[in-house]
Amino acid sequence: MANQSTPDLLFEIRNSFFIGNYQYCINEAQKLKHLRHYEFNDPNVTLEKDVFMYRAYIAQHKYGVVINDITSSSEPELQHIKMLAVYLSGNPDKKKDVVVSLENKLQNVNPDDKILPLIAGLIYYLEEV
Image (tube, rainbow, N blue to C red):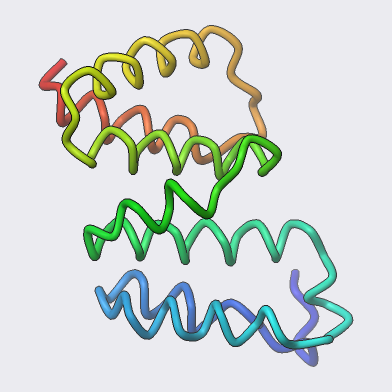
């Protein structure tokens, strides 16, 4: 059970994403970049913040931001988010490359990776597989 005295730093980010207030989600995520809170140094919290922020950019059709911000040295979960942005950006050749890459990644899924199955489901839905 979570400590009741510890605030949930990502509550506003999660909540605004799930209700569709994507710009607010992005704004709150960017505010957290500047905080020096002890809990925010947790890499899992940072990763979750980034996942919601980049998913909000995708929801706003700002694929270029996601593609440019996420580099090859980023966490694997963020790489999956980038795959979705590349897929949705519309280039038919890149869509095929993303699907092939996705199929390769699904051969060795890390059980702790919650993002890859989500992204795979979205892409396969869009591919009508």
